[in-house]
Image (cartoon, rainbow, N blue to C red; front, side, top):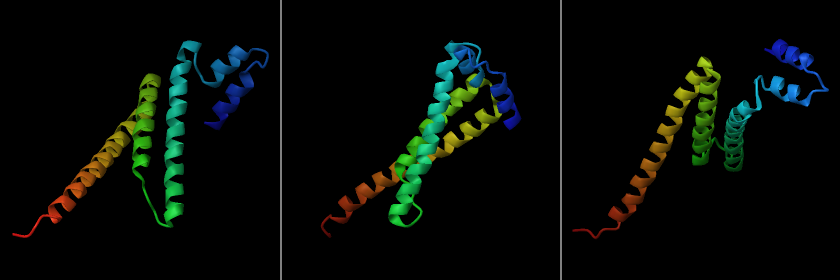
Length: 129
């Protein structure tokens, strides 16, 4: 993989900025650039989710997975899945499609749990019969 990156960088003509951008992102026209940006933003969201989880855990001095972690996972996964479908990358599509199921399931469990906990106090405060 690194050899391919170095070969691409070596083939770039520094006098041609257009060639640099197209070759660097391995695309044939600027029309494809929004797809690359979608993939970059999706990857950034994946990085941010880990940063959020790390900061939350450091603050609590225990392993914590905040709800926003799962939202960033779902959004980043959806963006990357879309990008990998566009790139026709079977490995990326497989990895992101299965991950998205897990992220959505965790969010569903979190919100179901919150709903259940919100109902409990109302039932606990009822007068004894």
